[in-house]
Amino acid sequence: MNNVKQIIWVIAKWSSIAAVLAVAYSFYNEQDTVTRGFVALSVLILYLAFLIVKRIDGTNIFASTGTKSLKRSYVCVFRKEIYGVDDDVMPVVTLRQKPKDVILPFPPYVGLSVSDGILHRENREDKEYTEFYSGKIEKIYWNNAANIFTCEVTPRKMVPQDILGGVIDGLERHGGWIIDGHNPVAKKALEDWRTQRAAG
Image 1 (cartoon, rainbow, N blue to C red):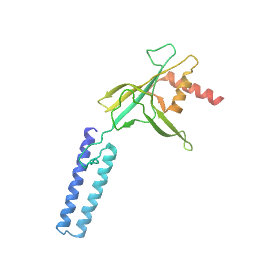
Image 2: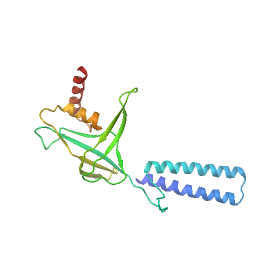
Image 3: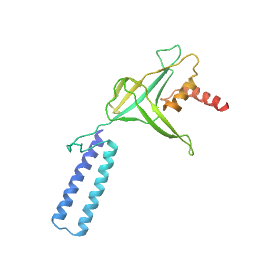
Image 4: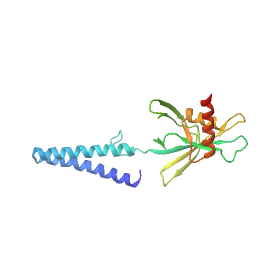
C-alpha cells in the first residue's frame, strides 16, 4: 500500500471510530431527532468509504482472533520468453499475462505456478473464457517504484517445425498471454498467421 492509500486508510478508519463515538454521545445526551439522523447518516457514509478503501487495498482490520492486523497483497507481472530454434541468448519475443496484474496473498517464490480464469471480450456479442497458466517461476524481481513483483517463468523454446505467429497465437488464445511491449516482428508474425488461418 503506497503512502497516499495509507493516509486514506488511516483517515477512513479513525473517522469511522470518531463517528461512532459521536453517535453514542448524541444518544447519551438525548439530542434531537434531526441531529441524531445527521450523525447516523455521517456514520453510514464514513463506513461505506472505509469499506471501499479496505476493498481496494485488501486490508482487514480484524483477524479471526479479534486483534488488529493487516492482510497483505502482492501484485505480480508474469513474463514468458520465447527463444528461436538456434538462439538461447536473446528471446524472439517476450509475453506477459493478459490480466493487468495478478494479485497474490503472499510473495511469489521460485517454483510457484499460478493459474487464473480470465473473461475477456473478443467483440460485443461473444465472450471468451481463458484459463491463464503461468508455468513455473524461475526468476523474481522486485520493482520498488511500482510496488510489484516481476516473475519470469519457464521460457518456450521453438523447434524447427514451429511458426512464430502460430506459437504466439496458441499461447494467447489458450494460455492467457499477450505480446509484451513494442515488438513489430512478433506482431507482424501474429497478424500473418491469423490472416492465413482465416483464409483457410
